[in-house]
Image (spheres, rainbow, N blue to C red):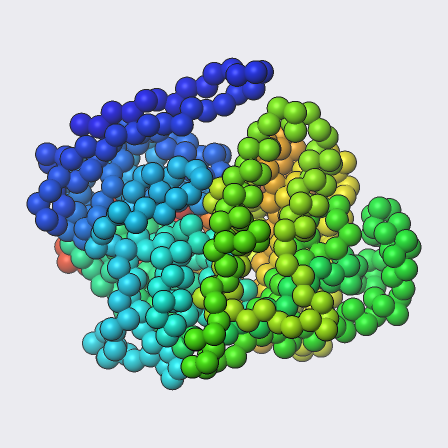
Length: 599
C-alpha cells in the first residue's frame, strides 16, 4: 500500500507555507490493469485543486493507464459502495470534484498533473492518452464528417500539449476552438463544457460526436446519438468515467496573428452613456492622452467591424494599465507551402519562447508568495503584474506583418500558465439585439462595468486581469451558452476576472458578489433579463443573485432545459441493468447533484 508524507503547515520567516507532498503509488493486489499488473494506488493522499480553494481527503487516489484498469477499479468501487470521481490537473475552482472517502482516478502521472512547475512526463504510457484519426464514421447511421472536417478519437487522458504537438507534427487537422492552457486533459475540458473564442464557435462539448465511458457496473458504454450527446458530451462525469471522446476537427488552418497593445479607451470603447461614469483615473488618462470624442466614435465603429470580421475575438486588460492587449485574428486554409515554412509558435527557445513563458509563470508564483511583495499594497501588486504582463506580450504595429502560425499553436499562444496559481470567476452573458441586430454597446457595457468595479475598490480585489472572449451559443443542454444563438440573442460575452491566490479572501469574495450583481442585472430592449450564467468550472459557489442562493438562481436560469436533461440522463443512466440511483451513487457530485436532481 502507498504511503504519503502528510501536508503540514509551518511557520517560516513569518509566513505560512505548505510542504510539497511526496506520495508513493504502489501496485494494488486487488485492482488490476489491462495487462494484469496491479493498478497504482496511494491511500489517504490529500486532495487540493489547482487554485487551492477546494480540498478533501479521498479514501485512495489511483493512477490508471488502461481502459480495462478503469473498468476493474469502478467494478471494485461498486462492490465496496464507494463513489468514483476523476481529477487530472484539477483546474476547476467550483467544487465539482469528489469528497472525503471517495476514490479519485487520475488518467496520468501524479508528478506531471499536480506538481509545479509543470513537466511533461514522456515516460507515461497509457491506453487513455492515444490519438486516432482513422475514424471514418460513428454510430449506427454511419455519421460522417462534414466537408473540410474529420473525426479524431482522443483518450480522455490526452493533454492539450500532446494534441498540439500531434497537430503540428501531422499538420493535417486542428480544433476550431480550445482553451488557452496546454496543461489540461481533454476529459477535463469536456466535462464542464469549456469554450474558446469567436462568434463562429460554440463549446468544446459541441464538437463531440461520440463518447465512451465506464458505467456504474464497470462496463463500457458508447453514446453517439446527437440528441443524447446534448447531455453526455458535457455532464461533469456524472454518467461514468469518460475514457475517450471523438471530436469533429477541421482541416488545418493558418492563423494570421495581429496582437496589439491598444489604448484602453479605444480597444473596447465605453458606450456614449458611460462617459460620465468613467473612474476619475481613466478620465485623467483620457485627457492626458488626448482621446477625443471623434477618436472614440471611430473606435466604436472599429470595434464593431473587428467583431463582425475576425474569426477569433479576445481582449485583456491588466489592472491600472493604460493599454489593453487585443488578440483578434483571421485565418486561411493551410497550403502545402505553409505546412513546410511555418514554425511552431511560440518558439521553444528565445526570450519570448515557450520555455521562457513557463519560467515566467514559475517566477510569478514565487513573487506573490514572497513576504516582501505581500507588504506592498494591493494596488501596487496589481500594477506590477499588469506592467510585467504587458511587457511580455507581442505587439504588431498597424503597418507590421502578421505573425503566421498554425491554428493549433495560435489557440495556445501563451504557455506556462499552469505554473502560476490564480483565483478566477467568469460569467457567460447572452448578447441581446438592438433593432434586430447584435447590440455592441451591450458588450462594451459589460467590459466597462468590470473596469469601473475594479477601480471603485481601492484595495485592488482583482490583481491579474480582466478578460473577455466573444463566442456563439451551444447545443449542449448544460452549457452556459445554450440558447444564446436565437432570434433575439446574438452570441455570448464570456467575461472573467482573475486575481492572485494571496488576495484577501473576504476582499475577493465581496468583489465576486459585486460583479455578479452587475453582470446578472442586464436586460434586453424589452426589459427582460438576459439570463447570465457562470462558467461551471470557475468560482460561483456562495454567491447570491437577486437575494437568493445561486443554486436557486441556476435552477431558474436552466429551467427550460433541466427536464430534457433529466429525461436523457435517466435514459443513459439506466442502460444495461443500471439504475439512476446506482449511477448517482457511483459517480455523483454533491454540488451538481443538488442542482440537477433536488427540487
